[in-house]
Length: 248
Image 1 (tube, rainbow, N blue to C red):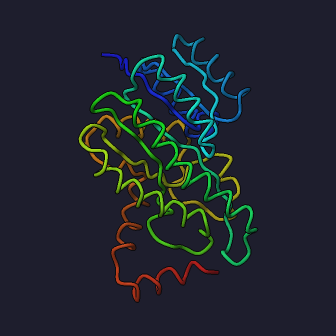
Image 2: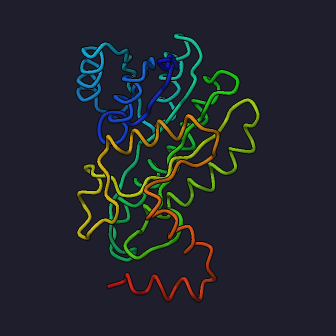
């Protein structure tokens, strides 16, 4: 049976968000797609509709509470959502002592505060038992060299999602996506070999399949995520000896 869910995807203009919108459209979902880049959203909606899908464009800035409130009002008029998903993020690799402070502040605003604001705007739009899906990262599992404020912000997101999972139950089911390395404009900034690098289309399929289940976290690829989960569980003395090798 095709999926006839109504799904809001924030951060849908490029990368994983655009690929996930395309994947859900292929599965028959009715989409609401949001981001700041109107031209890219319109082009994506045209592609989806040309393939027989449905995509409503609603502009929104995940870091702007008023923008999200206006988007929520528009979306509410179309009926309840089955899923609300945010993938919006900024990324700027480098060492903590070298990063530009203004860029660091903007990164935290988009990644952490933006997740908080999206959750508050989206949760009331969901039907009872609907999914609020927020995006952490394997980079948030443990502090790694050159992870700087991106890793720190994603660690904050993980903590926030864990709190929301309990606070919003049972009416809203809170889930988390924790991607590894995906070939997007963000990871193009990396100057190192990325283990388990995936294409956005592969990541989108894994996310859509994973969100069909009941588990809290959808994380991938497992050959990267499980070692990092193990590293997080180790005593600091052992973990620091291992991560020190990466600080070259």
